[in-house]
Amino acid sequence: MSILNNKVFSLWLILIISLITISINLPYIPINKTIGNYKINYVGGYQINLLNRYNRDLDLKMGLDIAGGARVILTPDLKDIKGEKTKEALDSLKRILELRINRFGVNEPNVTIVNFNNSYRTLIEIPGIDEVDRALSLVGRTAKLSFKIEKDKPEEIEENTIPEFEETALESKHIQKAIAELYTNESGIQEPSVKLVFNAEGTEEFKKITKDNLNKRLAIYLDDFILIAPVIRSEIPTGEAFITGGFDLETAKDLSIQINSGALPVPVKIDSQSRIGPTIGKSAVTKSIIGGIVGLIFVVFFMVSNYRKLGLISILSLGLYSLITLTLYKIIPITLTLPGIAGFILSIGMAVDSNILIFEKTKEELRMETPLKQALEKGFDSAWTSIKDANIVALIIAFILFNPFDWGFLLNSGPVRGFAATLGLGIIISLFTGVYVTKNLVKWTYKID
Image (tube, rainbow, N blue to C red):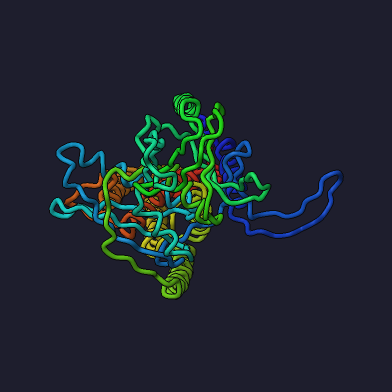
């Protein structure tokens, strides 16, 4: 007998899953009590902390239509990109834009490449952001760094003449990371700066440049504009350089974000940009929640009035379904949009459908005077084929709506994908709760081995 069919194991598994999901979804509650040698400050409102490196809260992430934010449409310039390199360039563009916005501190931006009749657009949705203009300034900049050394001056050139610079072998690819931090200058004054840390190859090249060009200026360019051109006073073997001058901390942070995320593979033009207020979203969410609660009340009334004790068991399974779903929304995380909430509510109904099929088949068997235990077993066994087929069809539809391969002949907008993601995830969870959990609770309630 499979361990999953063991009634004791199954009940312990259901109990453990229930406790975990309840603790994750429990809101922050201050306690400040000491029990023995342990002090408990609070329960709920927990965060993920893996090895003190990966930290993230477990709040639900709200989409643009709920939290407000910004929507931007970009047009990539692909005139110099041909054939198979088009997809590679667009994938790279999407990845870098996501990286930049994430490093800005925005949770779950939606960056989508839309293809209509071989005309490409990049749709960017940035939820929950107040500094829209600052975020948009990060989107279209290419942030290509280059390093140029001052040419030898002919003796007849006057001292105040602007120097000419020539290329070096040092490039953006040699930078391991850029960090915004305070730099203490020669006068002992701290000023915002961007610290560049070179990789092994870049460190050797930087060391060689500073050794061979003492008392010359090393200009650091960003997109053909000079950021700083300090005089090399000594050889620098550490592989670290500081960009200073005219920065505040926010400017330094923005520049470090652009350098870390790299240059955009193709130029982009901002076609349109708009700010979305959260008030409409809040109103719609409130009405959706009210609608969902009213629907649940009717579901509970229908199940209990029609199936009595079995109906109560199905409601318990539905409660666990909701807890598991919300837990996965927080852990993955999934950004909740209004269509996504609709997908969640729809999947609740589908979770109950499985139980209705099982219970109706059980009632058929009882009308044929089949003993209760055998009727329940036949109800689960007979209904499984219909449940499986119906849910497979629904998963196929969710897959098509989500469009993971970005097929140009299908919709691939953020709201549609949000609906498909919550619907598909809900269907998978409902198969577990609607069949496995309900079956084992029924076994325990009616003492079926």
